[in-house]
Image (tube, rainbow, N blue to C red; front, side, top):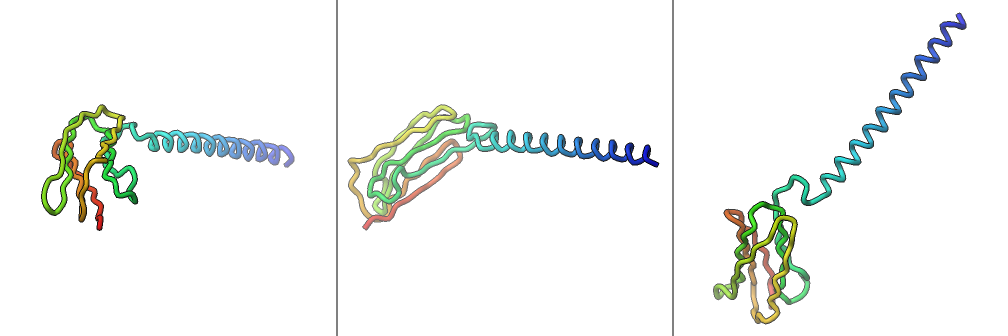
Length: 127
């Protein structure tokens, strides 16, 4: 009978050790995959448009590119029509700020940016 108890202990130790190894390897895999997903340039195809300071009355905005298409066209308009426009080229993984300190406008100001067929807009309402 003592021989059976020793075999069960060995079996239990093996199960515990294999379980601990499996849990450790699972945590390592999850940590690695989370780190890769947090990297904006890893297997992604997106771009972003945002104001540098949304609470300010300025119109400076940034375009951040993680696509293969590097050509962007931007326009600023209000209720009266187009105020300013331009084209920029951004390589994948880069961003560029567009400084428009000299524009004096009021009302709803819309910034539209096109990257191929994809279009994004942001706006501010000034009184």
